[in-house]
Length: 593
Image (tube, rainbow, N blue to C red; front, side, top):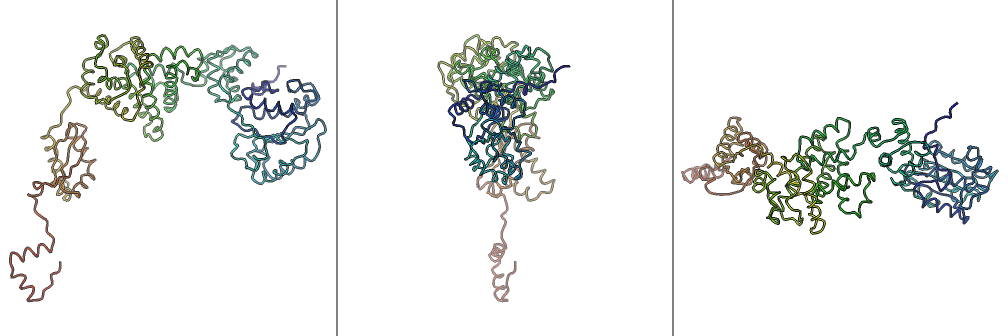
């Protein structure tokens, strides 16, 4: 009969301090306390899930009652105390789950048990897991015993939420903070387990498991069991990525290649494939941000240790990073960060991510155009590779701002739509990245650069539309007359009277200025601004903006009949016929308005 299956998290649970992974600062302190006989009466182990809190509590309980501890302060595992502990038959170690024993009565029962001395060994150890689940009344009932227990009683409390524990409890305990286990430690531990189980596991696959576990060894072992059941005796990187449904670096390299080539169609199709596989759009933004962060770290060999990627992937990152200057990476990270911040507020989240990716395509084009004032001389081979229409577009439509970056405009060759291969891009941009790293300062990223990218995107769209329609004064006046006619047809007499006192004129290529004679008229324009913009866009086919200007000129009001008050009407009548005032005084009449 085969042995019952035991999950790896239980089968390979550490039994000695030396086998605890990633908590050397805890295990060393506990071993020294045992060796120097300076054990506290109450310990509090706190930290994230799956990092070894309960495991260390059990090892501590077994070690301090061991009859023959080793020279390096470890339990022997052979004495009666160790065997009874291993068989869960020890009368000196009590494990309580505070989640199900959180009442005052449970704590009273515990207090009653503490009064009795241990039947075997030197200490009675009480391990209370998830101690933050105790009620306030239970905590208060526990205070006295916790502060002054018998000399043979030791309490070990464990929790994942230290902030929920009463300060009066914290002050009575010796606190140990457990840290998340690093990915390298998890990978090393998984390799040992895989060797014992006869599993061939690629280091890159184990690294992905470590990343997915987020510093929790128990989760890492559970994932290892799952993938082992999926793949059998061989765990590969590809199978791990497929089973865990994770986007790998190849996906982000593919996105970056489309960005460099300014191949928007392929970029959106790649995004669509990922969304169809069930990935969230926010996950793609976060993953691309981490990808570009790793590419930026590759620029300095000293920062390679900060990269959280499999070791065999580092050469690929080093090669790909040569295609991207630091200015591109910093701007891309800024755009991705802005997109992540506004993702939750976006009504159409897919469109929000698509626009973010399209903006990335224009980074090199904008940054290169901004540097033309500082780098007027282009190398002939690069100048020849840039389409003349694209060059003219940049010179006429982009308003560049001064920049501290010294990246040469050769990088524009990497974003031209006509290029079929990214191999020349790697050579050109590699040269640029070396120049930047030795002779220049990184360009400061600001929101204005994102605006420039949006302008360049609009310019590129207009470039492919053909001749651009120009707004004229005659067109503005004609459309404004149509607007007045529509107000009259809709019987909006108040608006018609107000707008009849104004006049419209062209202010810029895409701007209409409404000249208003008074602040009241300006208020009417502001209220109708959106409708005015839609009306002008509808009748001109252009993206029009509407502004106002307050001008109190005589020609605006001289043809408009004055509106008199009732007192002014009576005064005008008296001035025209003085007899009216005499009649009013003779008959003692009172004018009622």
